[in-house]
Image (cartoon, rainbow, N blue to C red):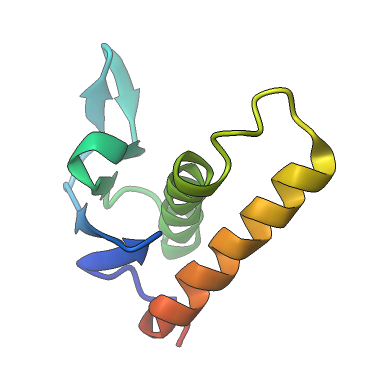
Length: 100
């Protein structure tokens, strides 16, 4: 898997930052963060490749949920699944270089 410099989620182009160390978010040390209002994802270059890939996917999922699943507040499983599947499909088709 390739962690790119940019990724599209729901038509938004996100910048992907790769700090060399964990960083603070609300006074907590983090290895990843999704910032919807800035179209930014940060993934620290800590841990092995599999760990970094997992953190990146975790942040992609946050982006998909923020973009496609905002109306799923009461967790209607079918509605959530329908919207989330659209988000996963979009991320995969708009960013094939990630999965090569």
